Length: 126
Image (cartoon, rainbow, N blue to C red; front, side):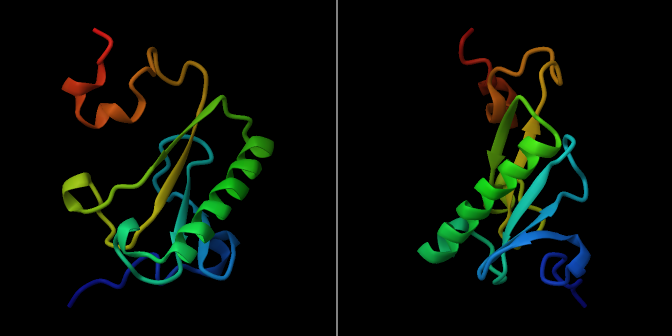
């Protein structure tokens, strides 16, 4: 028996914002304070399979979530990312977009950002 999708069975108190097609929660395993997820309400695995309306709804909530993080946590920057497919590191097969606040000095050298998913390719400036 397969486990139910954790994003399809979210308790209402986890949802911090929503619109007709998507919702926002704080990540259960945050990389940094305020790490949030934007999730379509429809169970679907890939950004490339959702409708333009769902994409728009997710991007709308991304902007709204950023505004909340600005007020609550005052980060110095952001990483925004989607792990699309198991080979890309997706562990929950329900599409979700990460909004990860970044803070000055949270890493000694943050250059390369998301390129660190393949460490040998991150330091492109060397």
